[in-house]
Amino acid sequence: MENKIETVKIELIQWIKSLNNTDVLKRLLLLKNQEKNGFDDLTSDEEKISLLKGLSDADEKKLVVHEEAKKIYGKWL
Image (cartoon, rainbow, N blue to C red; front, side, top):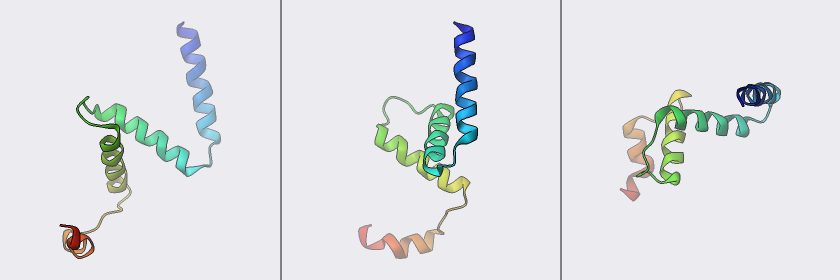
């Protein structure tokens, strides 16, 4: 059983190394972060995806200062 797991890991590593599709890579990163962050069962899948997207955006410095966000989203607040 252990050999099969190691074989699968190697196959996945080789596949990931060959990927050029950034959408697939982002999804894999979200899955990795989800595993690392250990969201509890009370958080819906939609909420988890949203939270992970926010964390990913923050890591990539895709942030908006609070005052600018208020201007953009103020009409909905």
